[in-house]
Length: 380
Ligand code: SIN
Ligand code: CO
Image 1 (cartoon, rainbow, N blue to C red):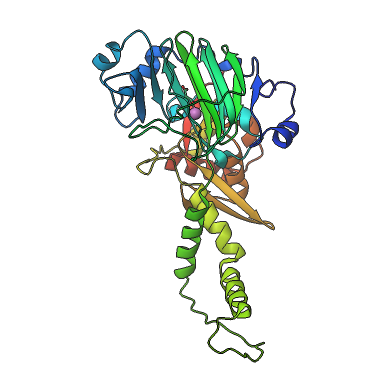
Image 2: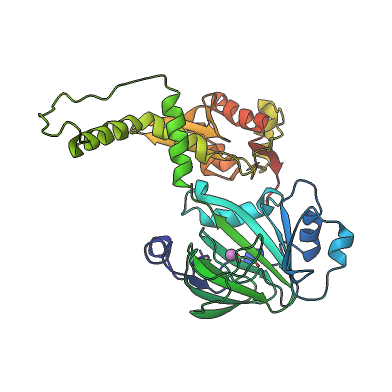
């Protein structure tokens, strides 16, 4: 595994993950040449694809525009100093699943998407920091990265209506990335990447559930249970100041509320549903119906089924009790052993499905029927 260079996933997680940046040379050679600049432009012109354009010297400094763009607009861009960014390219380019397969030392639910940027020489999105971990991999061209320490919202910013750009870029180190090289950045680290020539840069972006969103969902689900317990104080001692809100009462009430929220089953279902929600609300998987004979024939001829990259499958194992979630919903229609296979892999071939009975293969057919998995893809 070259992704982390000489580091094992264990050492990376212990020493770098969420702690400090890492540069790995030649980490991901398979990204080189995977996309051409024109492929990215075409995606940026497609309805439903999330795309942005940043022109450093536009009508205003660091002018931001949103896609979909017209080919004419993109072809009229100057020779320098712009960046076109396309989100969730992994949803459109199945070959990226293989690259994401290099990140299986982290839970799949932590991965947000693969954003790809196309930059003209001197192009940049400006000095900034992100709230999330990101692995930036150079696909084409050379990019100079300035990396500063972790900063926060108190760091001075340029006046800009939409972008949160740093007005001075604190530089701790510089690294020039060539095709295949990787820069890992933990949340908050200032960075400023300047294309030295035409660049394609892949950002494997991670996500972290906002804690208040989890709390909000947990409270909602708790309220919806219909239970309505009252505060109790069986072990009360006498008070001397009846007008005072006692520390003991505050502590007791706090304990009782936290106990109300601390329900193992509810935590699992709330997190299972929340973390398996698809990236885009309007995502509608397109299923195909296949019969058992066709499925078996595909597998026998060495074909692979590929997970729809936009579908999120997740399961929890609460002391042997498996619960399965797909795209934000509890799924009870697929046997848990089959579901685990579907969720742990991004591509399934005869090798993974060899030991499944015909009844279990029905679960795979259901995944195809719902569009969570896609019909065969011949992998060389
Ligand atoms: C880029 O690809 O130009 C921007 C990536 C980033 O800074 O997060
Ligand atoms: Co960034």
